[in-house]
Length: 570
Picture (cartoon, rainbow, N blue to C red):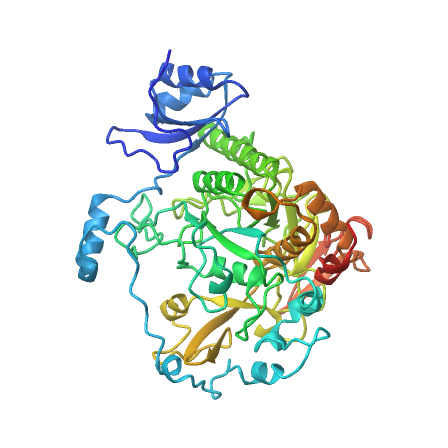
């Protein structure tokens, strides 16, 4: 029986006033017709289909719909399509009342630009502020081996020196034909140290801000635009901008240089302003990357609401097990689809200080809505997604000494490569300079009270760099989220060198990219003794490294090496 459905692959959930919930219903291979029949038999109603990934968006009443549908053999997983793809008329009206300057129905409304303060207008920089750029400016007169001037803040980029990116930039800075997708909270495409490489035309936003969660607790906060869907060159969190900057900030005499300063950066937003990432936007982002010639994507996140997705955990309800199966199945299908279309997949391994091969408990899930977390026992059948999904290259984080950072997850099965992620505790005392410096949106720095009314940094975590009357900001951050983009940048260098003409400009088999990432990495053995003790603030924590120099739980197949990637033979 033919059922009229919305357009295939629709990225926007359908509004429905009837009681119940929308679900992503994943079916077995070739089972779309059976799934549609099962949905109707269970009292549900199909809204749209996504045959590329094998699921149906359906509407059903929780109590009866899930219970009946879960027993059908055609169904392999059911995940809630959380209501984050639209904004209610009430929210739009509230926003319009608060922002009369945006009267009218502007679907693509842009927020007013924020004033940069006196320094931006005069080009002066206060060297009295703790995070001044004087030291960085002095470095601009020094030369690299390639006779090119360093960027003003290059002296602060210990991470680029660790992986040889400072040298690689002079011989293999990447190619404009290479498209790097940043699946994150957005990218500040107007940032002076991102704008030259930002591809606005290809960028997309697959989420819509939600001011509050279902329980009325603050979630994303007030919408910045009437539609509650931010423009594609905005990042109200700062996380995605930092990631993009590490990958590909240009060599332009401003701020810093990324690992691959000549590649194009594409915002494929799947993260909320709150920093959370849900299944449907991630599926849409990966599908979009696959169908639009993106060469490599960076995923510095895990899928909410479950830190670990357990398909058969007795501690979870049947509904929760169905949701976690849906996340595992749906994300794997999206990753497989992207990889089949030439997208190399790179992810942060995680910041839980956990051996992912021996997880014991999860105290953070489910993390949405707020205050629903509970402690549950878990085991190695529970997966951190997308880090532990097949076909994904997982990156652990290192401090400036080269040791695995305290926060970084690890595991001999899970860690593929390692890269600098920063670690303020790696050395005596605490030092911000041991973190990773990259671009930060001015609006976020102002909103988080990290700069004053005149635009001067109020904390050593923020650095300002001003040129020709224009100031830009950079912030120090730690995390495997910061480690992964270093590897993504190296992948972009390899694709630039060895890719062939293809969709979007160039293309390279992800398996070949992965092989060259591994062969160009610098092998690093486990510490001696293997049970490494981290001591901080009177506490002690032990992480055990398993494996050998060729592949181990702390460093994987080694530390990424941009310079070797720039010079290695295919």
